[in-house]
Each structure stands twice: as C-alpha cells, then as structure tokens.
Length: 118
Image 1 (cartoon, rainbow, N blue to C red):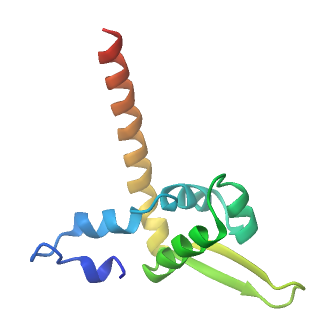
Image 2: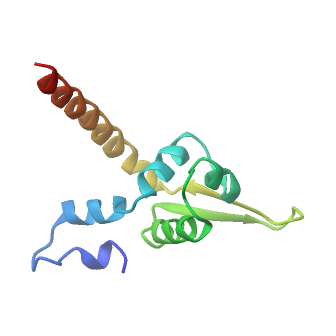
C-alpha cells in the first residue's frame, strides 16, 4: 500500500501520517540520505547499507518508487544494462524535511545525553 492511499487511515486526512509513511522503513531514511548526495546504482546503494539484504533493498526502493520519491533510470546502451536511482522532484522537495528531522534528532540526542550526565 502506498503512502497516498493511507492518507485517511484515521478517518481524516493526515498529511503528517502520509509523510511518516513515506519515510517508514528500516532503510528508507539512509537510502534517501545517500540519494540526496548523488544518483546511485543498485550495487552502490547495497554496498552503503551493511546488513541490508538484496530483497530488503529492492522492497524499500520499490516502495519509494511507488510513492514517487525516487525514480529508477535504465540505460540499455551499457552491457550489462545500467540501472540507477535518483530523487524525483517530489523527492527533492522532501530534502529540507529530512534535514530538519536530522537536526531535530541531533538536538534530541544531545539533550538526552546531557540530562544523563547531569
């Protein structure tokens, strides 16, 4: 099920739930962080995700494609065929949200670490 179709799971439209559904997944956030920096081929992505299986990467990429956050580009002029992934325009619009969430997470961790030390 894609993120758009779950927008009313509480009986009302909830844009926050839609955003969280797009980012929900063990590997999606790191996949998006890598693709924010550059387009990557499947194997390049897999190599940046220690512990992620091929099946899981394929599933997470498929969900991000379905949600129109990333695009799969296939270049048949190469042998073997060159497949790469990149952020779509919608994916690019998600970058500031991810960066803000990252900063919030950093501040949260630092605050809790400080509270433990005090």
